[in-house]
Length: 579
Ligand code: ARG
Image (cartoon, rainbow, N blue to C red):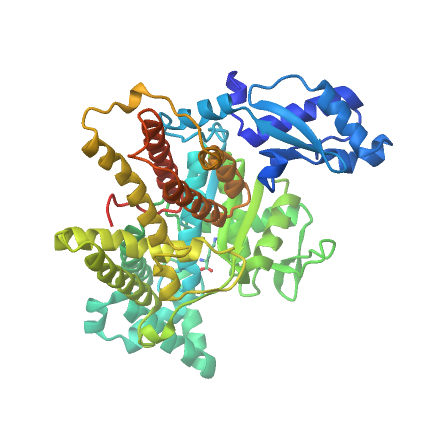
């Protein structure tokens, strides 16, 4: 694996390409070999990796699977990573990695800021559209999940070398502004606005919205205010700008706490002057037609409901803005893909406008990453508070609870340090509770689980990191003249080999998490890594081992710490040196 091209591959990819090459040489290039590859062995008894392709190809090749595998094994050229191949059962090919290669690969992680992860996305651009809350409307838990999940997807792609454009597509345009303007003019509590601006805007919005549902006249007035804004009325425009400013400054406070930043914060309004042309183009292409005064796109062939792109009152829709946004992003950034992160309720919207974009000739890959609900411990919050405030209360409570843990476990730390560690632990706990779940399920957040020091939680992994990192300090304390650089890593015990194998899997895990848009893949891996490390630590002597073995083990610890830290970084979770 020395050529430049090879280093751009993960171990699974390199072995898959290699074995596929053997299949193709032996059985002809004209059969479909795209499914031929290797996977991590389910059980160490079956080697380190395995290839199960003989079973699925036996039929096409009209040969028993075992005979297929025998031919592959007999003709496989040597590969630097492979020690030997064995055939098992009906025709599984078990792959045993060479210890020399394993040592070299695991040792290389130490000096590598990429931790072995190839920059295979270099030269490719991806736009990640996430968070995207609405101005002056409640920021709900869906936006929070979008922020946390989207940010992790953003980090995963950056590590893979992609040019990432994180775009916060703020909802700063739409019918809510008529409602909020009426609410602002009639129900505003000025003191409340000064104290808690977005909470007050949310309050007047909700009040005006409720009134608009009962009072036809009120609804008409809301519409009139909206039309005034749309036609550039100076007073309403100024008010609109004020709402945006107030909302953004509150959102920013949360982003700062969560360690999230964007490359672009472009509201929907940025695309306003492109909407009429978008509809005109759809009409020109014969895709849009008039229906009951509105302009619509029929998607019958795709078995999707009709999509309205222009309302009968002349206003444009959410879908229209999204179609225009895709065109604008494609023109400006030439992205390979655009990824959207929202809650599950928007699935139909994305299916509809993706279909329309494709029909318009858009070749950029468009992906909607959706997630289910997260149930928060409601009882903790007064229901009169807005959602932004609720989130802040959730983060405050997380930090406070983490502080109780940290001050008990590290009483010798100064209170300032304890607070700083508690901040990282509290925020980490909330993020991990979200990211460790399969996004497409309903997640129930509980404090016990989020903060458990002995389960699959953020604090558990942060604590594991701090403990692992401290091994090095203990070593220098005991052996002030010790020189780790003078020793190579050696793998003497099976558990050490197991740990090394886990460590070199990191690049594959990162790729899988990124391509499947599943940060939980990283979380699962980190938890396994921490557990594997802990049986390593419990079962073999470290500082008491003989010279050479001792240094090797301390080095392996250091690499484990780096991978844990790198993995947590992908989840946006900090790793304090001590907890
Ligand atoms: N502002 C929208 C909402 O809160 C989410 C926007 C998602 N991004 C997009 N391009 N549609 O529901």
